[in-house]
Image (cartoon, rainbow, N blue to C red; front, side, top):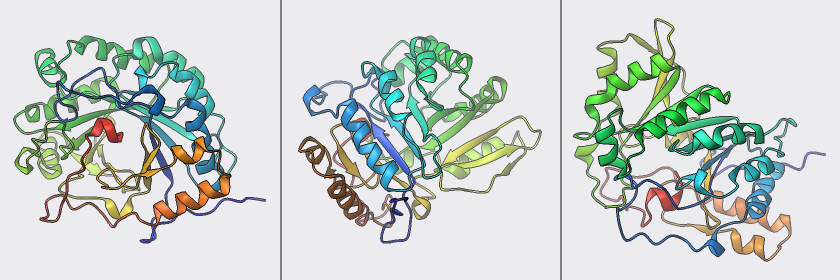
Length: 335
């Protein structure tokens, strides 16, 4: 007998996607995510173990209609023995008895070593973050001279059989807004689906300003000036996707700031230290680590998760006078 329940919030949105941060640490210092200095990482003892991550994930997949899990960070690949966690999560199934859809977002720098082991362990899809195609600008943004290594990581992921690979680009005025068409050409030439992401107020330096946001409309207008495109019908996924009319692939735009898609949101986030967040911009976190470490019955975990999801708000308020910025950076929350 199927004991699963529909995990639905008070606005009628069903949760189908679980984002899991496996570490708050990162080997880059991207300006829109982390401060360059003075970072206090979580002690190892406060991180969920692989067994605890799997136990919580099993409750989500066996008691609710969760379809997909995405691993994030920080940079997830710097968590030691990550393929072992992937293998553990790959044993989980959805309500149809099929393997859970398992994906990961990474900066790509370790993929020359890890792409094959991750694929063999059961990882289905990879998103790679890359905000510039210029080595000097890459160093300015990330504070690390690893541009060529990321390109090698993209090649390694493709060789390992990951497809389609999505390339995440945070579009920022005065930083990389002159590379929109360069990225489009790069994606078309290398069989990558580029996804342009509006700059969000989660930067480590607390310097975000609305005027720094290159809007979805601006991005689309620049692309359409050269490449005719047609929109693909939206799903619960955050990106609005467009198909090139010449049939040479597609790209996406994630308009978090200018065109929020909160009404379709189907995800919750589990932080590296075991806190559930119902929104990337949520101000509250809810602890599951303590429950798991105290070996509470699964029914208690189910009830707690349902209670947490019931608090999910209608949407963030970016751009409104009542918006309150989360106290944590993107790396601490889990992207």
